[in-house]
Image 1 (cartoon, rainbow, N blue to C red):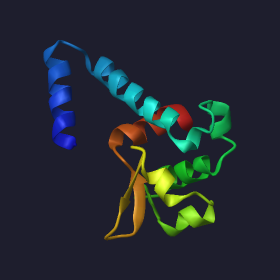
Image 2: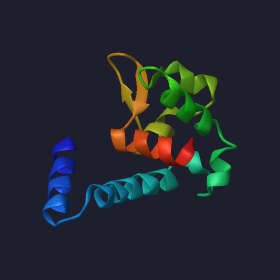
Image 3: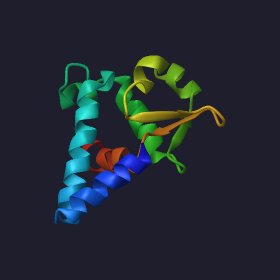
Length: 114
């Protein structure tokens, strides 16, 4: 996963793209993942703000270590399997915590969701 990502970034930079162009390309991919996920109920940003997904996004983004316990999903009534099958959140079984899948997702959330 990460090695493939680094190779992709290297390829984009070697083509002469600027940092902002590479960032835009990656954040576009994150936007597609949000659109495919259940968080966006119907694919509109308006609906994102009317779902428990926003509560989870805010909780992860605003926590000091950008993670929440897996039990938080039950609190906001989100199905674990549905939420984690998309490339937005990651579950860490050793700590039983949920984080954003990548820094690109965290950046996208800060710039476009919150």
